[in-house]
Length: 199
Figure 1: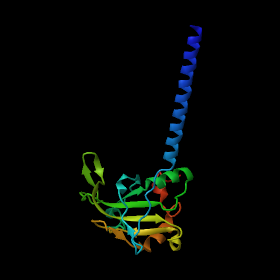
Figure 2 (figure 1 turned 120 degrees about the vertical axis):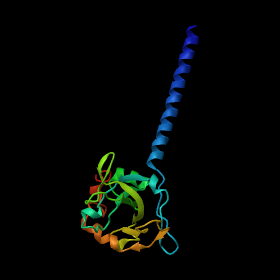
Figure 3 (figure 1 turned 60 degrees about the vertical axis):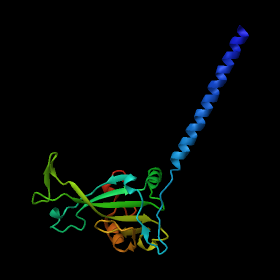
Figure 4 (figure 1 turned 90 degrees about the vertical axis):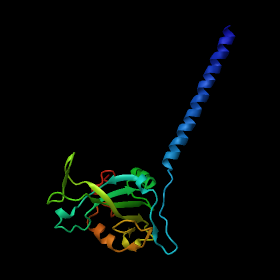
């Protein structure tokens, strides 16, 4: 009986060791996968135009600044919500390094406010008086590539229309660099408006 008991004890102990080893291996594999999350990188046409990024609504949402017409003399430069998303793989790297990696895509979808009911452009809804999102109104995209866009601080700026539908492709523009250079807090990105990025 004593010998039999010892054999069972050893067998159980071996099973525990094996199970622990398998769990540790699975945990290590899972951790490695999470650190090497696949990235969606910019896609270009043969002529160098940026292709409208895919599935951007599934990316990491970082914020929505708003500069309505009624608070800007009736003519705001961007009268819409700026719904900004960052490509998830780039965001994972940013969280670890506090730097935007090469290939980072920031997607700014423009969204109009609902029609005004008051002189300041606001309206009243069941939740109270304020500004409420309406129709989508085009998009702007920025891409980090310090070689391709060396002349504009390492970022390329693209306008996919300021109306719907969004253009399927867009040429790089010159107008974004000067604006971002003048007030953006970090690496020509307005991180001061986005707590997720304001590290």
